Amino acid sequence: SLLCLGVNGLLFGFVSILSSSRNIKTILLEKGEHFVEDSDSIIKKKYLYINSGGINIIGNKKYRDHEIVINGGIYINEIKPLKNKYYKHDQAANTLTHCTNIENVTIRHSKGNGLFAKGPFSLNNVLFESCGMVGLEASGICAVGLCTNVRSFFSGESGVLASHGASITLRGSNTSVQYNCMTQNSTDYGLSV
Image (cartoon, rainbow, N blue to C red; front, side, top):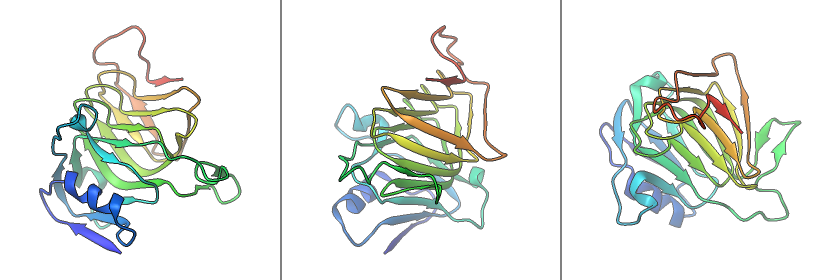
Protein backbone atom coordinates (compact mmCIF):
# COMPACT_ATOMS: atom_id res chain seq x y z
CA SER A 1 0.00 0.00 0.00
CA LEU A 2 0.95 3.63 -0.55
CA LEU A 3 0.78 6.76 1.59
CA CYS A 4 0.93 10.02 -0.39
CA LEU A 5 2.19 13.16 1.36
CA GLY A 6 1.57 16.55 -0.26
CA VAL A 7 3.38 19.86 0.03
CA ASN A 8 4.88 20.97 3.36
CA GLY A 9 4.16 17.70 5.14
CA LEU A 10 5.52 16.63 8.52
CA LEU A 11 7.27 13.29 8.10
CA PHE A 12 7.84 12.14 11.70
CA GLY A 13 4.48 10.51 12.41
CA PHE A 14 4.18 8.81 9.04
CA VAL A 15 7.24 6.61 9.47
CA SER A 16 5.92 5.49 12.85
CA ILE A 17 2.80 4.31 11.00
CA LEU A 18 4.95 2.53 8.40
CA SER A 19 7.13 0.84 10.99
CA SER A 20 4.13 -0.63 12.81
CA SER A 21 2.00 -1.44 9.75
CA ARG A 22 2.51 -4.45 7.50
CA ASN A 23 0.31 -2.94 4.80
CA ILE A 24 1.82 0.50 4.12
CA LYS A 25 5.39 0.31 2.82
CA THR A 26 5.78 3.45 0.67
CA ILE A 27 5.61 7.20 1.24
CA LEU A 28 5.24 9.12 -2.02
CA LEU A 29 6.40 12.72 -1.60
CA GLU A 30 4.98 15.42 -3.84
CA LYS A 31 6.75 18.60 -4.93
CA GLY A 32 7.61 20.95 -2.05
CA GLU A 33 9.33 20.90 1.33
CA HIS A 34 8.71 18.19 3.90
CA PHE A 35 9.89 18.75 7.46
CA VAL A 36 11.29 16.32 10.01
CA GLU A 37 9.57 17.07 13.29
CA ASP A 38 11.59 16.96 16.52
CA SER A 39 10.84 14.23 19.05
CA ASP A 40 11.66 13.88 22.74
CA SER A 41 14.44 11.33 22.25
CA ILE A 42 18.07 12.47 21.90
CA ILE A 43 18.73 10.32 18.80
CA LYS A 44 15.33 10.89 17.24
CA LYS A 45 15.57 14.65 17.80
CA LYS A 46 17.72 15.14 14.71
CA TYR A 47 16.23 12.47 12.49
CA LEU A 48 13.28 10.81 10.85
CA TYR A 49 13.74 7.43 12.58
CA ILE A 50 13.15 4.26 10.51
CA ASN A 51 13.08 1.09 12.56
CA SER A 52 12.28 -1.55 9.93
CA GLY A 53 13.39 -2.61 6.47
CA GLY A 54 11.42 -2.64 3.26
CA ILE A 55 10.22 0.96 3.58
CA ASN A 56 10.29 3.23 0.53
CA ILE A 57 10.45 7.03 0.56
CA ILE A 58 9.97 8.10 -3.03
CA GLY A 59 9.83 11.58 -4.53
CA ASN A 60 7.26 11.83 -7.33
CA LYS A 61 9.26 11.11 -10.50
CA LYS A 62 7.53 13.82 -12.50
CA TYR A 63 9.60 16.37 -10.54
CA ARG A 64 13.35 16.81 -10.19
CA ASP A 65 15.03 15.82 -6.92
CA HIS A 66 15.70 19.46 -5.94
CA GLU A 67 11.95 20.17 -6.14
CA ILE A 68 11.19 17.55 -3.45
CA VAL A 69 13.02 18.48 -0.25
CA ILE A 70 13.25 16.76 3.12
CA ASN A 71 14.38 19.34 5.68
CA GLY A 72 16.14 17.27 8.35
CA GLY A 73 17.99 13.97 8.53
CA ILE A 74 17.05 10.31 8.30
CA TYR A 75 18.23 7.55 10.69
CA ILE A 76 17.95 3.93 9.56
CA ASN A 77 18.20 1.59 12.52
CA GLU A 78 20.09 -1.70 12.45
CA ILE A 79 18.08 -4.66 11.19
CA LYS A 80 19.17 -8.01 12.56
CA PRO A 81 19.96 -10.35 9.67
CA LEU A 82 17.86 -13.43 9.01
CA LYS A 83 20.29 -15.98 7.58
CA ASN A 84 22.30 -13.03 6.20
CA LYS A 85 19.68 -12.25 3.55
CA TYR A 86 18.74 -8.78 4.78
CA TYR A 87 22.00 -7.04 4.14
CA LYS A 88 23.56 -8.99 1.31
CA HIS A 89 24.32 -7.21 -1.93
CA ASP A 90 23.06 -9.40 -4.78
CA GLN A 91 25.86 -8.81 -7.29
CA ALA A 92 23.99 -10.45 -10.16
CA ALA A 93 20.80 -8.41 -9.74
CA ASN A 94 22.73 -5.41 -8.38
CA THR A 95 20.14 -4.89 -5.64
CA LEU A 96 19.84 -5.13 -1.87
CA THR A 97 17.19 -7.23 -0.19
CA HIS A 98 14.83 -5.93 2.51
CA CYS A 99 16.34 -2.47 2.69
CA THR A 100 15.09 1.07 3.13
CA ASN A 101 14.82 2.65 -0.30
CA ILE A 102 14.99 6.43 -0.86
CA GLU A 103 14.60 7.95 -4.33
CA ASN A 104 14.36 11.29 -6.09
CA VAL A 105 14.68 13.69 -3.13
CA THR A 106 16.96 16.33 -1.67
CA ILE A 107 17.87 15.96 2.02
CA ARG A 108 19.08 19.23 3.48
CA HIS A 109 19.56 21.34 6.60
CA SER A 110 19.86 18.39 8.97
CA LYS A 111 21.31 19.38 12.34
CA GLY A 112 23.20 16.07 12.26
CA ASN A 113 23.85 13.76 9.30
CA GLY A 114 21.72 13.85 6.18
CA LEU A 115 21.43 10.06 6.38
CA PHE A 116 22.82 7.95 9.23
CA ALA A 117 22.39 4.25 8.45
CA LYS A 118 22.99 1.27 10.71
CA GLY A 119 20.88 -0.97 8.46
CA PRO A 120 20.71 -1.71 4.71
CA PHE A 121 19.67 1.04 2.30
CA SER A 122 19.38 1.90 -1.36
CA LEU A 123 19.54 5.46 -2.70
CA ASN A 124 18.71 6.58 -6.21
CA ASN A 125 18.93 10.19 -7.38
CA VAL A 126 19.37 11.67 -3.88
CA LEU A 127 21.09 14.98 -3.12
CA PHE A 128 22.52 15.71 0.35
CA GLU A 129 23.00 19.44 0.82
CA SER A 130 24.13 21.66 3.71
CA CYS A 131 23.96 18.99 6.42
CA GLY A 132 25.42 19.98 9.79
CA MET A 133 27.60 16.89 10.08
CA VAL A 134 28.14 14.14 7.43
CA GLY A 135 26.01 14.06 4.27
CA LEU A 136 25.76 10.24 4.09
CA GLU A 137 27.11 7.98 6.86
CA ALA A 138 26.88 4.21 7.21
CA SER A 139 28.11 2.55 10.39
CA GLY A 140 28.36 -1.15 11.36
CA ILE A 141 28.35 -4.44 9.46
CA CYS A 142 24.57 -4.35 8.87
CA ALA A 143 24.89 -1.00 7.08
CA VAL A 144 25.21 -1.92 3.42
CA GLY A 145 24.32 0.81 0.95
CA LEU A 146 23.84 0.78 -2.81
CA CYS A 147 23.85 4.37 -4.08
CA THR A 148 23.13 5.43 -7.66
CA ASN A 149 23.49 9.06 -8.79
CA VAL A 150 23.95 10.33 -5.23
CA ARG A 151 25.44 13.79 -4.62
CA SER A 152 26.75 15.30 -1.39
CA PHE A 153 27.60 19.02 -1.20
CA PHE A 154 28.36 21.56 1.56
CA SER A 155 28.24 19.20 4.56
CA GLY A 156 29.86 20.38 7.77
CA GLU A 157 32.00 17.24 7.97
CA SER A 158 32.74 14.45 5.43
CA GLY A 159 30.51 14.13 2.38
CA VAL A 160 30.29 10.30 2.54
CA LEU A 161 31.57 8.16 5.43
CA ALA A 162 31.62 4.35 5.90
CA SER A 163 32.80 3.15 9.32
CA HIS A 164 32.91 0.10 11.63
CA GLY A 165 32.57 -2.47 8.83
CA ALA A 166 29.90 -0.65 6.78
CA SER A 167 29.86 -0.82 3.00
CA ILE A 168 28.73 1.89 0.57
CA THR A 169 28.76 1.29 -3.20
CA LEU A 170 28.67 4.53 -5.23
CA ARG A 171 27.79 4.34 -8.91
CA GLY A 172 26.20 6.35 -11.70
CA SER A 173 27.43 9.14 -13.95
CA ASN A 174 25.77 11.82 -11.78
CA THR A 175 27.42 10.69 -8.54
CA SER A 176 29.43 13.55 -7.02
CA VAL A 177 30.94 14.41 -3.63
CA GLN A 178 32.25 18.00 -3.52
CA TYR A 179 32.59 21.12 -1.37
CA ASN A 180 32.20 19.32 1.96
CA CYS A 181 34.22 19.67 5.21
CA MET A 182 32.78 23.14 5.76
CA THR A 183 33.77 23.06 9.47
CA GLN A 184 37.39 22.50 8.34
CA ASN A 185 38.09 19.65 10.78
CA SER A 186 41.33 17.87 9.83
CA THR A 187 39.72 14.42 10.31
CA ASP A 188 37.04 15.00 7.66
CA TYR A 189 37.31 14.26 3.94
CA GLY A 190 35.04 14.21 0.91
CA LEU A 191 35.02 10.40 1.05
CA SER A 192 36.07 8.78 4.30
CA VAL A 193 36.42 5.13 5.36
